[in-house]
Length: 258
Ligand code: NAD
Image 1 (cartoon, helix red, strand yellow):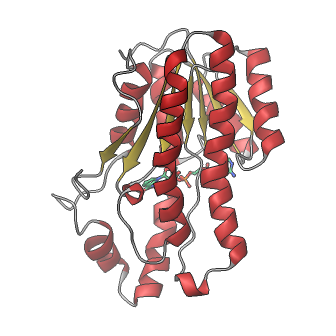
Image 2: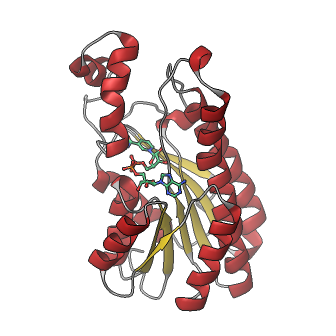
Image 3: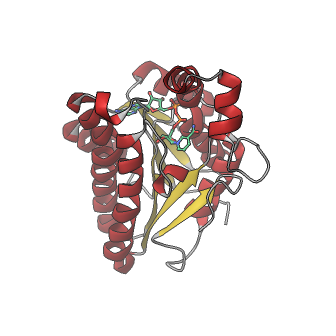
């Protein structure tokens, strides 16, 4: 199940954090990995570090032509994509009443438009190639629960569940599966940045943000790790049938149980 030799895997936002850990796990499992990130230089550096035919491409997932041209280039230079991990994301912390419309739209563009555009491009290649595929959307525990100051993030992450379910239904006849990974807090740059931001908004210390906000509802007060998410992404990429499709997998130390 963990042998991805002969597979082409495109991971967005793979120049950092969770995406990078997944790209490494896929490369170790034998896949040809495409590191797609808006940070072009970091994407190329990451791909160089992965070796073995890995490819770094500049891609703004919220831009239709970037996405379509990026996928076309991957098909020309490596072949059609078998595995997509739509992972690129940002966070903006703000009370809803202070949130600008521009920031709301930016969040939805990266998280929702990005997931739609990359899923569409991947499905088109997977259907034409006729060899099935796995589409993984990076949700969050916030696909299932809400937190203060994260309105667009929570809305977008909930939305990914709906998108994955439609992809699962439309993809089934082509042996394309779609699932959502829902991590708890993982210490990546995205999370490190929001600890002081949340401390400011809530008027508490950074240690209290970690203990009383981020990890409060976990079963053991522990962060989820990059390895935990990479292992889950490996499992979903290699799963062999439509039995596991349209699901969301919470990997969050029990923060939310469904
Ligand atoms: P990160 O900041 O370490 O990495 C995000 C990557 O996305 C960066 O390399 C960045 O350049 C890239 N990116 C940003 N905007 C982009 C765009 N428009 N097009 C292409 N690439 C873009 O963050 P991370 O923590 O690894 O987060 C990755 C994903 O995991 C996000 O979708 C995030 O919402 C989700 N997630 C993270 C956590 C966590 O605790 N870290 C928890 C749940 C879900």
